[in-house]
Image 1 (cartoon, rainbow, N blue to C red):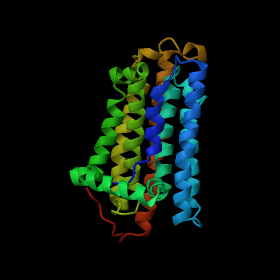
Image 2 (cartoon, rainbow, N blue to C red):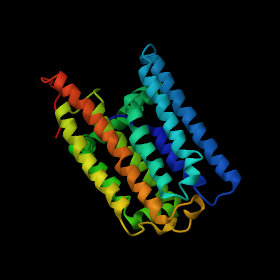
Image 3 (cartoon, rainbow, N blue to C red):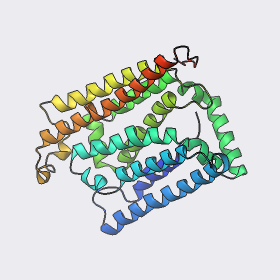
Length: 288
């Protein structure tokens, strides 16, 4: 299953020290400094590991840098501040974490290089932890069908009005929501895009995998965009300052999930289709 990008846990859970919204300017500034500090630390680990194992291969490092930029865009102003007033901007924040940052960190082999960035003793501890978790059934939980189901469950359950609004009103729940979105997306894309360790899905299985994900995520976007009712009353009094009614803001959020996110699935499915056409005898196995 690999080493989780621990910087995400640090970033999202450490937000509980200050949270969103009503903190003082000093508290908010301290939170943003904490983001930058944690990213610097994890960037140091990554670069240290990259220099040990692949210092002449620049593509992973470029993907990692792009992933860092996506996280910064999602968690720093202006998106972070505007997400408290507009559902559509909050949706962009989630899409940056799930559809941009997560696959970029998969392509960068962030888990591998960060692990290599630790000392020998640190890597041994991580290996023991991974073996312990694997012995408790974690490997079975990493199968593509399970991950696809968890990805769908996380996406839908966190958009239920009661749970979504509880996240908006409670910084602990909000942090867990962001963490769940990123982790589920990270493993969703890792199963599809990575070929290190256990075989990834072959192209044909990958197309089916993407098609199923695009169906349920598009359905959620369509429901949100076309609903005549406001789903989240939290935004009922914050959108007018930006020239939108609450229902217009919700429609825009639904379109963002429906179209740009849906296009990402289509784009990667087209790439897999090309691979399937060019290499019809591809032998990589599926774990369904």
